[in-house]
Structures are given as structure tokens and as C-alpha cells.
Amino acid sequence: MVSTTLSSPLSPAHPDDTAGATVPFRPRGPVSAAVLHHLVDGIATAHTVLADAAVTASADIERDDDLQLALFVLYASAYGAFPALRPDLEWDPTLIATRRVIETAFEASLRRSVAVPELPAPTADAVARALFALTGAEGGPSLSRHLARKATLEQAHEFLVHRTVYTLREADPHSWAIPRLTGRPKAALVEIQSDEYGGGRPDRVHAALFARAVRGAGLSDTYGAYVDDVPVVTLASHNAMSMFGLNRRLIGAIVGHLAAFEMTSSIPNRLYAEGLRRLGFGDDVCEYFDEHVEADAVHEQIAARDLAGALAEDHPDLLPDIVFGAAVCLEVDDRVGRHMLDAWARRVSSLRGEDAR
Image 1: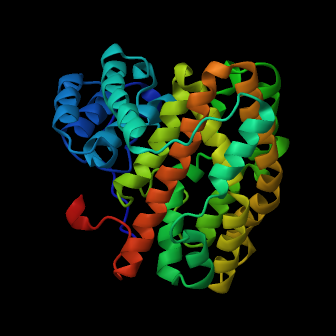
Image 2: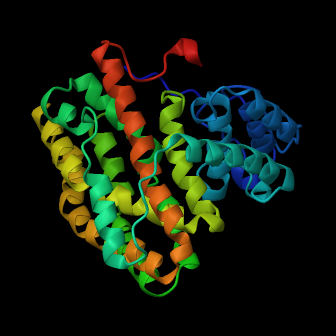
Image 3: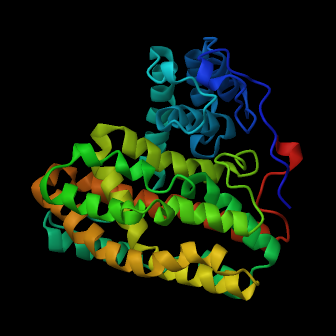
């Protein structure tokens, strides 16, 4: 069902604390290969030139495996997600230049492809109402309802594999916004993130709860173990929030993204827990989803009014990006869900096969 995780043949030469480390996935083309070669082995190549040419040639950067994996790796360097990525190269000018080439094109593509509703008035109440209307709109087929009622055991495992790319690092992309906010929005974000990080209890950190869930389901909780397996839409979903979080000029977008994320979490997580229990999973797997039913019902109110609404009220110039970030969250996450449902409707795996690697 899920392939055995293979490590890249790349290996670090320096510094000592990365000796012997590898990244648990393979390149998906020349740009991601060159970026990995630089970040792991410290050997600079013409990846910026390669990235510029690849962006120009790409038919759809949002679904370009090579460029999205390259961007994922560049963001992983900032997160410290993989020991094999040399920390002394985090701010290497050529790697930053390559990141800017890819993410500039990615952002432009999202601004073209994602429909953004009419902007509300820049008041906390108006923004909150607009976000509740946006997140409450009826979409297409529901992944959470499918998991609750129809999913097979194999499909449930695939669902968890897709979720490992973000959820084993849950909350980290949105936390980049904390030092960039002040006043009411900052206090609201810290309140939300405190819960995400367990309120001071390491065993209650949401990423740790999810790690227990995937272990309980018989999967690996090693971060990145399934990057080879997930399709490009899953990488792009994670990359969108990382891009918003890591770029100070996109502070509005990451706030809007988090608001939409929290406002569309409680009911789906209840359905995910129902489906997993229907398939025979125990509390070790379902606890993560149970936790989000109550927590995110509270978080959605804070995120809509005290975070996104207050930010728009304090800085009306950020309102377009707040709404844009929320719309992107809904669309890119829907793409992942539609990909899974479409594959399962055709009775095939939603994960990449060996021939795609």
C-alpha cells in the first residue's frame, strides 16, 4: 500500500552533527536534485539558472513535481526539518535566490488560479462574517464524509500518509507570524498556538498526538518518511502555507490561511475520528482527531475575530491578503481531497507509484 521509504544517495560532508544523515526521499527532477546536492553535500550548482528555466517551461507550477519538491526542500532548510540539510547553508545567497525564483512564480500562479470573494469592510465583525461565509460555503464531495462512511482500511492509511507532510510539523508554518504581529492579533495567535503546542505539556503537542496516531496505524512517524509517496498537490498545499509564513510581506495571507484552517477543522476531524473507529482503530489513533473537535471549535472564533478581524481593523491595507490567504487555504486543501477521492473512485491509489519516482 505504501512503499518502503528509501533514502537519497546524497550524504552530508559537513558539519559533523549531520554526518551520516540522509534525506528520506528522492529528487523529482533537475532542480530538486541540484538543491538537494547543495544543501546536503555543500556543492553549489547552477540551481538558480535551472529553476528560472524550469519556471519558464512549466505548464503549471502548482502541479510541477520538480519545482514543488525543490521549494519544499528549501523551506525544510528554514524549519530545520532534516538533519542532513546543512544549517550553515540556510541563508546561502544562491539558495535564497532559487527559492525566490520558484516562490515568486508560485505566488503569482495562486493569485491567478484561486478565486477570491469580494472584500468585506475592514472591521473585525465584517471580516469574521465574511470568513464564516467563505468557509461555510458548500463545496464538492467531502473527504471527511467519505472517511466516516465509506473509506477502506487502505484508504485510511493513505489519508494518514498525506497528512504526515504537514501534521508532523503542525502549527510551525503559522508560528512564523508571531514576531511579526502586535497587539490583539498577536495575543490571539499566541493563544491558538499555545494549544497547538500542548499548553506546556509535551505529550499534548498536536504534532506529537499525530505521531502517536500514525504509529498506532502501523506507519512511520519519522518526518519526511512518505515524501516520495505523496503527490505534488500535497507538497503544494504545505508549500503555500510555508511561503505565506516565511515572507513578512505576506503576513496577511498567513493570518487568513490560519483563520480558514481553524474554521474548517472541527467538523471534519469529528468525521475522521468516526471513520477511523469504524475501521477498528483505537484511541491511540483517534485521540489526535478527537482533540481537534473541541479545540478548533474554540479556535475558529478567536481566529476569525480576534486574529484576522483585528488585523484587518488595525491594518486595512492587509485585508486583501487576509482574504486571499483564506481562499488559498480552502482551494489547495480541496485539491488534495479531490485528488484522493478521484483516485479512490477509479479504484487506484492516491499515492505515487514506483514508476513516478
